[in-house]
Length: 422
Ligand code: AMP
Ligand code: GLY
Figure 1 (tube, rainbow, N blue to C red):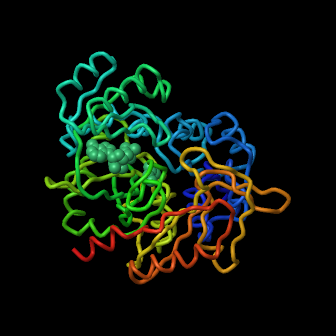
Figure 2: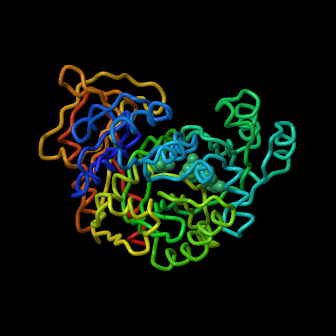
């Protein structure tokens, strides 16, 4: 089969490495891919959001199957456009991707179908939002309705911070039209769990759970980032929690989307918080997580392409989805200064024996050399029998990768280890 993977980050690199293992995979293209992905796929210089060019490329190159990985092309309707030309896809259509594309939509969905989530109010008028804040419980959480590169959530510790957030999102349009509406939400506490799932709209199969580390610095200090590392499975996701999530969250969400005429097919990502009152949904994503994918897919024992085809053809129920009972840890190496400003263009060297475990996110090829070209540069994953071993091994592998101005968190997995001792 000729396969096209849309996107160009570490997540896409992990998906491509997974697809490559399938006997059915012949040629794999990545659009746009990156200098590291070029090791495993043919990179095509088309922006992930350029629907017209992507469809043209897919048609002209006899693509049999397309995996649309990032949120923005999904929300823009790339799957609809490819399917219109007869190209089978993994990923939700536009009317289902709205589960991530609009936080107001997802909150209303959860309220209507009794899916546990934080209490909230929606505002499309800044003055009304500012008035509401005068008496709201603090801390509170302000969320831009639309996509905002993962930066649209502000935890306000004071009333003034909440007001500043409203002004910057709704009036100064920090995230453009994504801030035309906001959600103001109850502040919840508890450990967070990411659960990615395969669903074809009929059956839902959760993948192994994982834990992201979103802050830039050790001990969850510093700014929010796209994610600085992950471990899987997540020790907070016990069997009892998993069962509760399946009954109260996963199945009800799939059914709710069907009832709304928005059947979801693809990877549905549940960002959960395990509160004192049980698991609650913090966010839905309409795609694989990054860097969750870099620990989840290395633990998948079944054929990824077969599963994706089964999702697309709505026969997931009769398809094997098996994970190993090992543990995985991924450490992200970033450029010093990320998520704010950072320098690019430093040569990356990687010892050959760890190449298979590296997922390149921000790098480009120049005269045969791999150069840093982004904030998050790459992720290194180790799989081992136990979590402590996986963590230790991933940091050993970090020492086999070099570039100037590199920085990474030294405590990925520490919270998970603590949870296991509790
Ligand atoms: P998101 O971009 O939706 O993943 O949100 C970013 C982070 O904000 C989440 O991973 C949580 O740590 C935090 N967060 C979002 N909503 C809430 C909430 N209602 N209460 C507490 N923390 C939250
Ligand atoms: N790692 C969080 C996300 O992919 O949204």
